[in-house]
Each structure stands twice: as structure tokens, then as C-alpha cells.
Image (cartoon, rainbow, N blue to C red; front, side):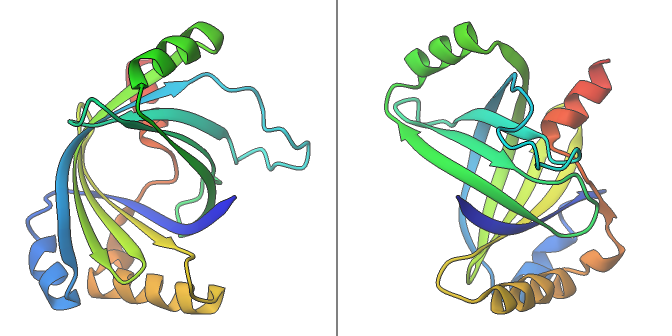
Length: 183
């Protein structure tokens, strides 16, 4: 599975982050509306999977209705930066795949968000406005062509420039937050 180092935090306002993104010299890639449909999952395939590492399976649909991404990931629920392992699969028939997964697994919840994607080297910076939840920043430093130590240094650099040391960290997935809110 692919690996990245992630951090997520609540934001009162995304506006304060724009000058810091400029200082970081991050590049804006796109702004997109995303709908993530989370499907019910059994406990992880491995009995050694920690209790706080719930496996998740979601279908990510965007404004481009002709394609979507099926994403499976395992990530511990910690406030600090944490490792996430994942698999991605692009589909050109999201409607049929969604029908199949709904029939086989059932829908656990749906998360809608507006996402601004910014890039700094191998770090994806997501400025998210999540329906019914508010504003968040999420960092994903992808392990791609650098050592783990280099990825950690890059991740920490981004956190420092964006002043995320004093941010309100979020340990769980947006799906968990939506389900907590509706229960």
C-alpha cells in the first residue's frame, strides 16, 4: 500500500491561511466539489490492526461525473501527524460501482465538501469546507521519491510555516464527524 503522513485541524477561517501559503510558496492546483460515499467495512483484514485504526472504503465523486476514485485506507485516530496507508483505483463508471458497493456493503455515510488543493513539493494541502461541519486544513505528505526522514522534515516545515502547532487537531475522518453529529 502507498503511505503518506497526515495531519488535520479545524479552522475558524481559511482566509488566514492564504498569506502563509504564499510565504510557503505553495501552488494552487484546483478547487473542486467532492462527494465521498463511505461504505460499511468489517474490522481490518489483519488481527494485528490496532483498535484505533478503522479501515475505510469510500467512493470519491467530483464535478467530473465521468470518473471517480475508489479509496481504501487505514489510518489511526490520533490528533498528531500520523501515517496513513491507502490504495486508489480510478473508475470511469462511478454510478455502476456505487450501485454495486451499496448493494454489497451498504452506505455508512456521505461527506460533501469544497476542497482547495495546494501543493508544496510532496505535500498536498487541502483547505476544506465540509457541509454541516465547517472549515478544515488537511496535510498529506506523500512518500514518493524521498526517504521517510525527508518526508517528516517536509511535513513539519509545512506545519510550521502554516502555524499549525497551535491549531485544533482532529483525530478522526470527516465521516466519523458527520456520524457523531447525526447520532
